[in-house]
Amino acid sequence: MRSVAVLALSDVVLFDLAIPVQLLGETLRDFGGGTDGYRVRVCGLRPGPVRTGSGFPLVAEYGLDELARADTVVVPGFGDLTEPVPEAARAALRAVYERGGRVASICTGAFALAAAGLLDGRRAVTHWAHAALLAQRYPAVRVDPDVLYVDEGRVLTSAGLAAGIDLCLHLVRRDLGPAAANHAARRMVVPPHRDGGQAQFIERPVPGRPGDDLAQLRGYLTEALAQPHSLASMAVRSRMSARTLTRRFRAETGLSPTRWLLEQRVQRARELLETTDLPITAIAHRCGFASPLALREQFSRRTGTTPGRYREVFGAAR
Image (tube, rainbow, N blue to C red; front, side):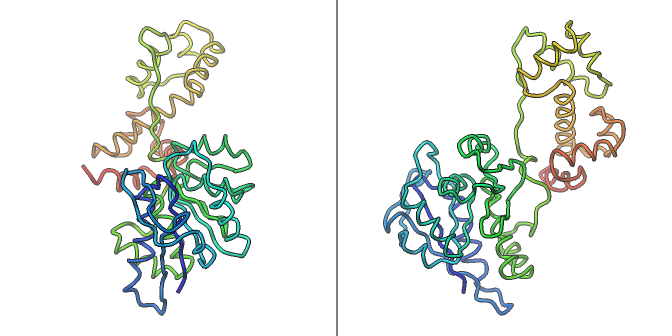
């Protein structure tokens, strides 16, 4: 039986904590296949109460000593990223890796692995809302903000919250095979493997200030996505040169005018896929794409999945 220690740091995110406890510790107990599954234990810096992000205490039966006996250590997300990760936790995580063990993180748990130096020179992911902070604070980490999880052998990281389910199913698939992973997915009532990445869920609000020429231009473009627009035509409408328009657009949105327009077209396509039964061809036309193939190419590049697959998943609520 494989031993898993779940390290609950202060202000631990309960949802993140529950994922490995439930998926690894519970859903595989009745699985046959010649495997004993996992033994999961919740640990704190020491045995006793651990403050949670939800405001009530969690009791950890084990302390950091349990990490020395675990095959895998999973660090769930924790709330206060302004506080340093305790040195005792960092040292314990380094010791796990140095003796040949495996470490994994869910959501902001990646900050603990990074603080221990275990992500230096590696690809890693955290919740998209904190990816920029992770990259800024730990420049040696190659942060990929668009994926659900990253497998670097004995160091694994996952994106926010529910992406921890994807990571744990991946661990089961690696350790026990696809049949066990499929069994766990059925028990959790989730797909065994999700297409795409967390780029599908990132909110990109449109900035703007009333009375500003660029705000007016963006408003016009948003309402007229089906029409063709070039940099030159946008510059004429905004009454400035193409160079000035591009410079100001980048300063306000971080994107060039043409790139911003393409992002809005993909966003509109997402909305139509979620809320209507329009054919893909009609959606491509309404969003200003020259063809369904052009829509598929740009949509897949930005969300990691196809328009049809996206509709299957996100149009289900309709």
